[in-house]
Image (tube, rainbow, N blue to C red):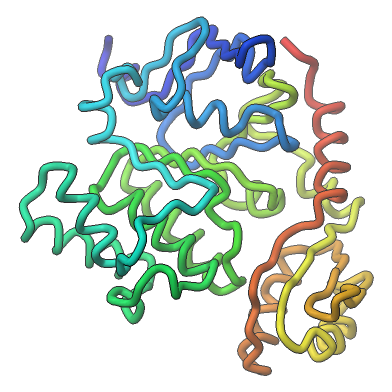
Length: 317
């Protein structure tokens, strides 16, 4: 292989079937360093594609190379790849620092190196104050950040991040996006999936749109932002004092509608300008000292936008 091809993640006519069920089919991709987002409805093949490039799944057909390394060569692959999964799986009873240190020791590092890299990663995701607390006591957003720290702590050149912004409050989300940009400027690959389309459009160097196991479009997918403007984005916010938050956001031009959830522990906000709304939300949370459990787009709204994009960007190959 040439040096140029070694800098890419390459899928050559890759298919993966689970028995008779299609995971992905005839995928042809050449992914350059930078931030690449995988987008598509649930079940479109995003996680399958990530598991293939990290060696957790073997393709039924085709060939994969991650910066020149085959995923079935785990000893070499794991040195250059960090994976942040969508779901939580932590050893019982460990602190954040112990979790990262033990992971680095398994990588073959000395105790001194492991401790140094563990603290560096914890600082980079801004969990310093919680480093020596047990992960079992972490909030959802803190667990998400310690998973990201685990993915970056051995300084991999390829980061595979499945829904890395899920569960983060607006301020932590902004800080994490800034970290992604820093990592991309270092020449790393960041492959991430997200349901938050306006953020995908904002931070990604390239986008891969999947539907039912097929790549239906790739590159710069134009029209995401204009489509979000014509279809107001619905955002569900789980928080304390939803009535206070509702009163504050409803008076803003960026907000179309606000509804308190039936259980009185959250609210559904519709906005035509997600960027302005998330900035506004940060300001309100700080001013009112509110605790936000999580912020996520409403599924039915996201699916409607996906249907528009899939219909407008190509057919199955």
